[in-house]
Image 1 (tube, one colour):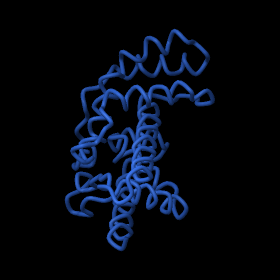
Image 2 (image 1 turned 45 degrees about the horizontal axis):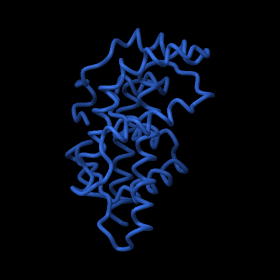
Image 3 (image 1 turned 60 degrees about the vertical axis):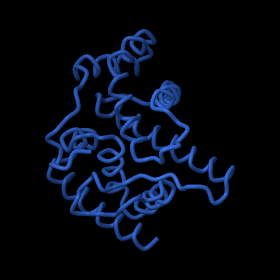
Length: 198
């Protein structure tokens, strides 16, 4: 995750092409989805790799499997009106987050007392150092934060889980870059306290 308030971006598919295809898909054009996937596949794969980089070494999910499962969930999004590529990757990040949490819960049921599935918030900002947090605990903390401040929780999901830049996050949420920066900082402080207490 970028630590410089979003100036670094991963290599991206052409945003105009992606946005046009997403809008065509929203209007029921199935062919647009076929054209879209090759344009976004590498970015989805990088996103999956980033999620799995913080998991334990023996994690059974592989990036390609995560991408394919997330893809199946994305194509089931019948009622989404896609705004742009940032919106698409935000929903993809949410799908991947749910996959990892579901996988961690299933593993916990299968193997009581097994190694926890871990994710680190450290990369989000080295000045806010909540160390390895159980992905289930992080998910619960985000749900708790969402009940208190849904915007803060959404910004964390977009920035941390989605890897979106500050500019992309502001575009998805329809707010200013300054607001996103301030909101992300406050959310990380809250999550750090919550996870430390847990």
